Image 1: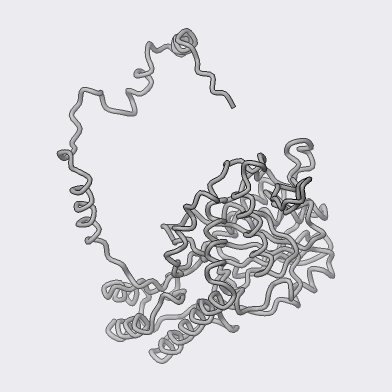
Image 2 (image 1 turned 60 degrees about the vertical axis):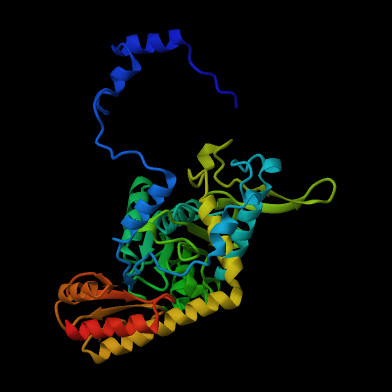
Length: 419
């Protein structure tokens, strides 16, 4: 695409039209006059800057993290960032130009393949913005597929996901209801749920299908898929979720990575990008975008979504992470997360905490504290521990991953005893 700058006459004409004499007049309210002194220290060399930044970094306190609730602190192999920056994956940005984008497209294809392996579904797109928007897109997909406008949401869906879903539904004239009937478009359930409970949801899938609705499973902590049954095995038609656990730091809440996978009969309804593998006229393997389900280019009225992109860099990070970990490595992460959460749960129960989970849990559990939760969390913080998420009524949501060592758990227990 050629860049054609405006001429001096064009600029002067526009400035005259809006009543100013120069570009600087447009900026005078958002920056100080150029002749003002800026309160900056004296210049430093690169070496001095590095020393200065290291001294500042020493002021940071790194806490042992027992907070989950949608963002999970998993170990990221050091090889990941080195692979992420390799030129093979940094090909032309826009994958529509397939001949110049093979690295980008192959990464998409591998990501889709991993998501299908984990969820048991037939097809995956090349990622969405985050787990919450992926869930909302699934609701729109279901309504587009069956023409119904009622959404049933099982309790204990992540509250932030529910807020995003309500926003989408309001704009699309979809109604969230508390029953499943012949007007229900889809049934949505999170597994493990917001309190960490994990269960076989086959009975809910049966209810949805008997009513002619689609069954959507939301997976916010996807490492659980390494040791729990794949959603496809208990009747899911669509699986959505958050991929942050796969090689992406918590980063104060973003950027994240949404995934969406479906049964094959929904192929032409999937929002976003889908990458396929093919061969050229010479028999060479290649990758291309295919099944542009949103139809935005030619038939907007048939679009299922206005999503036009994917989280390419985040999807690549997740792909590299899953490839590095492999099947056994991911199972180890999940098994350690499970075991350490249950170890901490048992120790806290012995200290008078009441565990409120009414089903088996994965790596997160809800506990009623024997003393004011704020007091206990404050004491934990004094001891270098983020003890969990307080969710009201002296209840805390506690999470463990493989990064929480046995020593961290003992420190947690000791601090609780002192509180």
